[in-house]
Image (cartoon, rainbow, N blue to C red; front, side, top):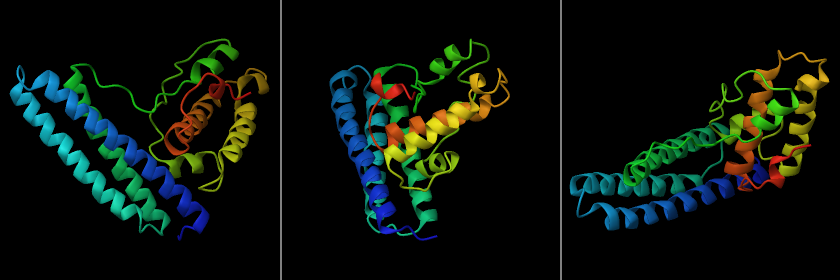
Length: 204
């Protein structure tokens, strides 16, 4: 399936932004590794250096392919590759900082809904299912490349219908609710790059 010009521009812009951000983070991490690891953890530093340089090379390949994107399935494949590169970077970053690997794409609307529903259940049980923007648009049942306004509107409508308060306390739809929350948050942070300010986290 071919991408129309609008969707292609949105996809290329989003991918280009993520690549630029990751490239900048890679450079900072390499500088930090030299300062903190080179003398006392030389072997570990060499491993990290090689890994971060490989991350940068993979970014160059993806960046070049993004410019020639035209098909939806190719876009999905490229986004999956970028997701893999981001995961690889996080592995090296964790080694540099000597800390546990952070959860990526952290969902921060679960607590809001949990409180509104009176608690119960594990709000993070279904976290981590959304792995690409294409998947997130499909979950929200809107066209790939739709505006943030359209995404927010679709999310609000579906969230209100699925919330237990709108279903006489019926909590059977909570797994689907958690999934659309994750899709919405993924698009905000990874696709539109709006960040996670407090005001942006309140959908109603």
